[in-house]
Length: 133
Length: 133
Length: 133
Length: 133
Image 1 (cartoon, rainbow over the protein chains, first blue to last red):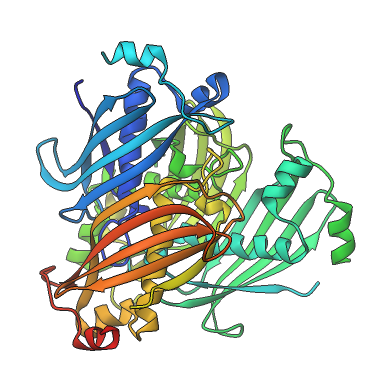
Image 2 (tube, rainbow over the protein chains, first blue to last red):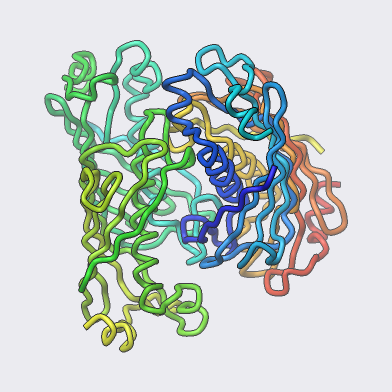
């Protein structure tokens, strides 16, 4: 699958008094890219929850912080998904200034597909598997 | 009613690269104090939603930022409630270092009591009115 | 001056377990629009701090919460500035779905122009006054 | 070294519309515990930056999300540090309700000690090594 690349600007809300982006906030940028990848396939998470009783939950995060992002930086967040039966595995990177810019963060995120009521694992929607085959 | 005073430490998560607490994050401190005031009366918001189908929604905020809070500050957040039929009106202040410390923020927050499904206004629980009378 | 309108998508990071956008997080959206208004005039806040020793600090917030924003909403955030000698006064609104969409939040934000070291009030840059005259 | 255990209450600010704590926000809880461990040794990060030109930067995060935390939960966050020459390695866990409560999150965080100006690696303060030996 072709990775999606999403852009995000760094605002004051993202930074901390170390004058860099706060370490937890990179995970917000990563999720925006994953959400936009889902949206590009026609899936909105609010609708998935309401209409299909389905939700995604992060199971594990591995993130290496290579260089800090700073106020006013324009970030390029890539999202390369691998689909499994009941989960999604994303390779993600954040770069500064362009798609080939300086690598700031390298991450792997595992996301489980769950029943929104029982919180039990559930198969990915067939349509998602087809559209990404 | 006697105001409740709650404490909060300023961590990196609260600050921004201006080296002060980010302006939106003071509202988090204010809500912690309001939530602890509710808890001191025996109300937990999760239970209010699940068991009573009731929730609180902020209707308006007025906040004056007088002095900045900084990393490692210990904040004292006061919460002086006035109960009305279907709403709560809070006078709140944030001070540094002690209950009588330097005044950093002065605010008024209006909160409506809503039905969690219809989002329509709803009377405050009778028990809340009694315990605060 | 013509108001700027900025867009923002609502992600999980913005919401809370009341199933709406968390009340403090609307202030993040408001600041993104103010920052983009500054950027549209050629000012970046990181550079203002480093090169001109100048920063902006929010002095007061008045916000009326009219309707809740929800996950996946596309928000339109307007920013109508009035310049004064050493401060900026912004009228801001957040609407859902389009520039004329449902009004969710109406706010007024006062921002002071400060010396980044002394934190004392400072005149707005002459160039800012000219470009907005 | 004896691990430190720190408590944190889950407020609306921490949750998302999936009705659980937002995945990035667990990292805030982890940092509070690390910061309080430093404080228990007599180190405040604001002072470390100003007086010693020293700062800590997260280098890597590995986190396994086992069970979700929810609004009003009381969390117990442990922090077991291993000191190296120019870095700190923390084993951290988050449990619900008590120090032996249900395990929600298991994490390893690597933190580098940096010169606050050059951002180059720097030895840990001798006093920190002595107090934790």
